[in-house]
Image 1 (cartoon, helix red, strand yellow):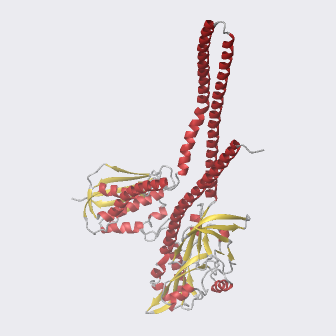
Image 2 (image 1 turned 90 degrees about the vertical axis):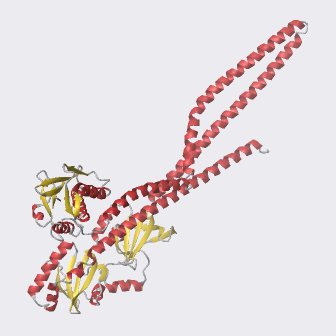
Image 3 (image 1 turned 120 degrees about the vertical axis):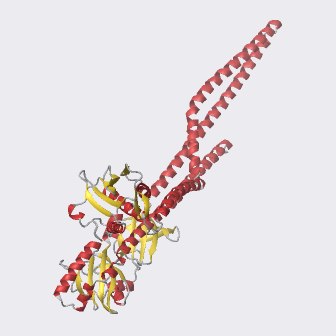
Length: 600
């Protein structure tokens, strides 16, 4: 039996619609993935730059400390008389105090043979005293007159650390080496609460800092037997068995980024990551960020499903409209057939009435008129029913077509044109904001001319608040001024006075960062011939045992920082013939007061 052409036409239309749905769904998923990868690349690059800057800052904090300590004559005296117990005890206490102030892991002194004579951990069971570390590369570099830098597991403590070493030089002779060990474990704690993972590896590709503990001391690239032997002989990872991570590179995204698959043996499954890395040549490290792709895969799948549903609904609506049109054509054809049959019956009847010509004519005329009226009435009735039905049935689908068409256009417009426009708009906004910030930073970054001049206190305070306000714009805390003396002026160095105010405001904001309603209030007061600037906060205040030491160099109660800000500020005030003081407020919180003579 031959296949009918309408059946072939319907089959072709259905196949074509299915093909279009497959292509459009695949294109939507593809562009969703591509856009997500580009956005993830930007976010990961920003996170990588922040992490590398954080590592550089942590290393820079301890970089020059060994050189500063090496100038102390206590160390030289002990190296000259290494058997003097009193000198050993003095240096032990000195290194312990230094280690506490700078926040290092350990600080110790070695003679020219690598034997440790004094150490900050002299009271601990695993002390470095009388331990020989001459095999460490940092000792060899320091004895050659260089600054030694090295990362390794401590052979005594077993803890990870970065070592800075500097020679003790007296009369051109290298008497020994002073070493400061920096603890690296806090770095992982600070970055472990993020969705992305971090890996810091040595030149051999061995992970020694990571937010994923199971990756620690694993190699991100295959290691030969010879390389493993060299690592073992160097004792860098003393007693640790180095394993290879099961990493497969699926494809490269750019010269510094790629998509990796890592086998997680703990749950026996593979995880996909977007990886981007950066080299730290000064430290000899490679830093890699791994962003999981599970959410991006899920988003790609959801996008494809939404597009597919839109296409299916559009196809169903189109089929419904086609069905309505087809039924309308069938009804019109039925009406035409009924009209023909009626005309045929009228013609048969009129032939039987030949004997009454006149009556026939009148009857025929009447019948035709009646027939025309009935046909017209029937047409109008059918049209009215169809119009109401079509209006009722198509209002909602037409609205849905309109809505889904708009959505489809949005998805299909991810051809980067809208994305480019959006990015350009954001760039304009960021440019305006950066212009405002850069103008303030340019004003603040200008160099002081060391000249005393007549300065408006209110002007300096407003300038300082403008500079720090960008840093705390997302904070719930408030900075305000209470000033009943707007014209009060003093003689001071405007740049240095602004620097002191910014330092005090930053300290106050840090003191209230955990409060829900933190306040920093700046008061201006006149007392005799002096102008007083009070910087108050409603934090916890300062412990009484710390108030006397608050302006001492290197004294700090923070986990980070060298404790030099308040010390430098107090010294600047002395130079300007003023005074910087501190007290606790009765209502709670701390008050720092700047006192300067009023300008005549």
